[in-house]
Length: 320
Image (cartoon, rainbow, N blue to C red):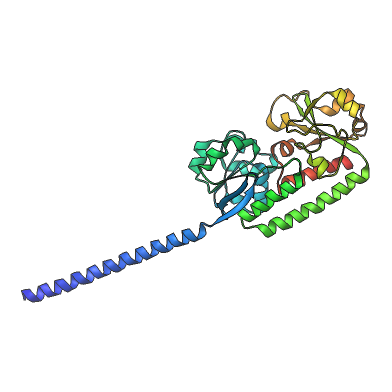
């Protein structure tokens, strides 16, 4: 009887060990499959940003965006849900829906600790954050998408196409670029036919700066086709400091105004350029063609699908 008992017990133990081993094998197989799947989805793609060729994840799922033009392009391409962080305090009104994402710091000073906590797959920056690029790249792959003021539209298209590549939305990007080009062609032909000369200015707490071709707001001239009222302004990011007497001397047919103070905050008491007595003596003043451009679009954004569309709508007001 004892021998029989030990024999039965031995068989039962072997059976139990066998079931346990099968269970472990099943778990191991499942884990390996999961790892293989993760490896398959973590594909890389090489794109060209404003610094040169860079390798980034294909179709990243968690993105921190500091460049508002890139943010509006992502939104237009239908991949805005991938944004986990942005400079939320400096978002233009048309991107207000993204105020719900995590704040990744200021538009000029990223919060490195916060970004590290967000664990993004990709970080997108523009010129305002360029000094932090090296530190950001230590957290996640970082691309720098700038606008070339000497070739505004082509650099804008390049950035849109780059985002289309990264998020596997190349055909959508191509279609939307074609739609924008139709709008650009129409406004350019209208501006050329008008024979009117324009001047772009920025007002900041009562102080004026003027911008010419190949400058920060050069898109008005080189892309939208407006003839400059002053073709001697040196190209620069901050513009040429000017007086109201200068505006009367140049006497533009259309005066475009970007209110920096309204875009970022401050004293706007002396910012109503259209009310100035000297401005009222210009052709623009007499014909009610002192056009206030949407400050948050022109100063805080630009270079995106939606921002370019909004800019076209703004400059068309000068041709009405």
